[in-house]
Length: 214
Ligand SMILES: O=C(NC/C=C/[C@H]1O[C@@H](n2cnc3cncnc32)[C@H](O)[C@@H]1O)c1cc([N+](=O)[O-])cc(O)c1O
Ligand SMILES: [Mg+2]
Image (cartoon, rainbow, N blue to C red; front, side, top):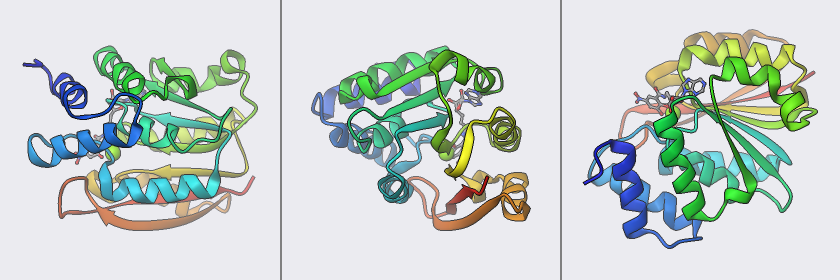
């Protein structure tokens, strides 16, 4: 009965997932989106790449740009070590409201700070508001034309350090050509493309992992 797609995803979680079990939460979303209604979650295939990069980086402080319904928020938070934090940024209040409920249902709310507002305004406030020195890991999955300006903003605000890992979704589909040019041509990044498929589809997509060299 949920009137919006995010609300129908939340319903699928409440109906099919186990409270406090993050894996069952994103699996319920994957099932719903694969069989009932496509949605722009990073999904199960690219999710495995996200999981492996996260496990390698093991970030103490991570940033996600574009929460949407919280699918990748839950995927990331479940892999964080005790005491580690994920800050996720979302400007659509309706999406944020659903994400908060999905994050809470998964039981990862203590690791996650969901901040409502535009990334362009919030990034410059990260240090003062959250006492962040720099991020260990950044997942970019918001509007694709925001990837470059927000990466430059993170650099300019001193929020990246030698070794910070940026992982960007959708660099092929819908595509982030300017971003690929930026990180692949800049001497300040070591970039690598992880080929995969667009969520719940056979179309090619992939994740670009870029290490900031300082
Ligand atoms: O368009 C896509 N993603 C855009 C994601 C957008 C999400 O991030 C928020 N946002 C945007 N700028 C923001 C700035 N600040 C805060 N939140 C922001 C939007 O409110 C939305 O919740 C997309 C599209 C496809 N696709 O196949 O078409 C597949 C994907 O995996 C995708 O991620
Ligand atoms: Mg995406």
